[in-house]
Length: 140
Image (cartoon, rainbow, N blue to C red):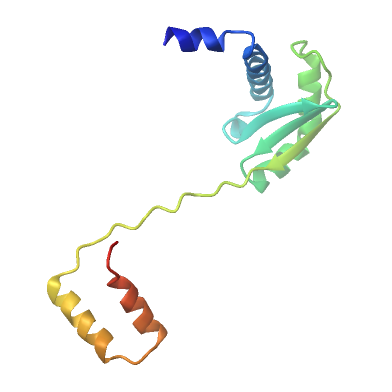
């Protein structure tokens, strides 16, 4: 564990730690200058060419944040914690892909399995037969 700590504090990773500290300060400044309703829904990304890049949780938050962006710029520029002054704010909407939880597989009684097998054998080729056939694929 000590070797990893020495490696992370070495010269190779000093740029990464400085960038992380800068980003943490930017996030802290942003959250201290917005109202409570935005605090858990926005994320400061970076400052590029005097433009603060913010990522919003959804489009509703982004549009509300856009309405108060001039006030946020004044508050952030009023505090002397940042070296560069901000001229504008660019807000991106982050698209969250909810994880599709796998359905709980329920045990099917053997009588139901037997009935489905018989139904599958008696059916003509159809999409329903393909679905039922997919239920009984053998595991490899």
